[in-house]
Amino acid sequence: MKRKILVVASAGGHWHQACQITEALPAEDLFFVTTMNELPQRDGKTPFTIVTDCNKNTPFRFLLCAGQAILCLLRQRPDVVFSTGALPGFAFVMVAHVLRIRTIWVDSVANAEEPSLAGQKARRFSTLWLSQWSHVADQVGGRFEGSVL
Amino acid sequence: MIFVTAGTQLPFPRLMEWIDTIAARNALDVFAQTAEPNGAYRQIRHQPFVTPQEYDSIIASTRLIVGHAGIGTILTAKQKNLPLIIVPRRADRGEHRNDHQLATARNLTGHRGVHVAQSESELEAYLMAPTLESAFIEATPAKIALQTFVRDWIYR
Image (cartoon, rainbow over all chains, first blue to last red; front, side, top):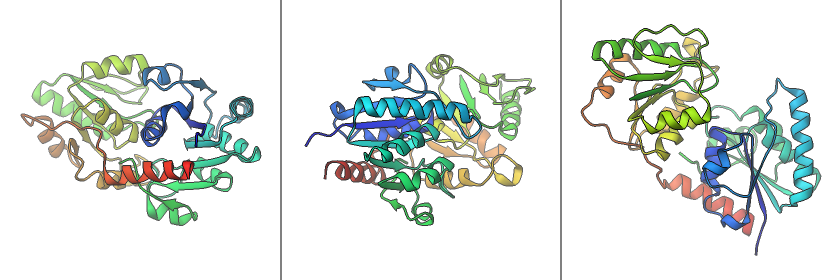
């Protein structure tokens, strides 16, 4: 059965990982969201939209990004939101949870000792929460099912 | 050209000093992205940050990447099929808030084309090796397991 999947990842390592994990999914089911223009075009990831980047030190930008998440999710109506982080991914997962859309968080493989801050926040809004390290998954009651490395 | 990168978040002066010394000793052509606004190195070309466009043109003329054990750096080397030497950041030297890069480096043991250097002499030995294997995107069992689990969960 066809699904519509929103893939949300900040530019950089998060984007690399999101692309690698979702490359096994049917390309026609995917819609990409990232924080840097030219990145999805360069990697041939279409359709896509660009949202405002934010981190824990930029609360205004976070609110802006959360507003963009509401509009994007209402417009796209995906069946699943998938994110590797960081804070923009959390905004989408949080809003998706409110809209009763299934959410998958895959914490970045860079977080080998404890979950990322965004990942910790996203835990309660995630239908499925994975770490790429088994001992990190155990810390927050998440699952370990593999890693991009 | 050899491209050295500290990533976008934190400077890595230990790596840059090693590279500067090794480049001087062996007349190497090095460009470094240091994440240091006031980096002072004599033998290498360097700037604190690069734009995505600059990054792509740098990578196009790069034959070897040296970096911290950052995920973006590792995946870039694999995608571009370049040899990669990584020097993990250490918390006891104030290079990161914890030792997750040592864990990442341990996890990369056995990945072909990814070479881990823990000292200046190890770094120099890799840099001066006549041939160094390139990294590439590997369909490791752990990666296939993760892709398959996510796909099956979505389409169950």
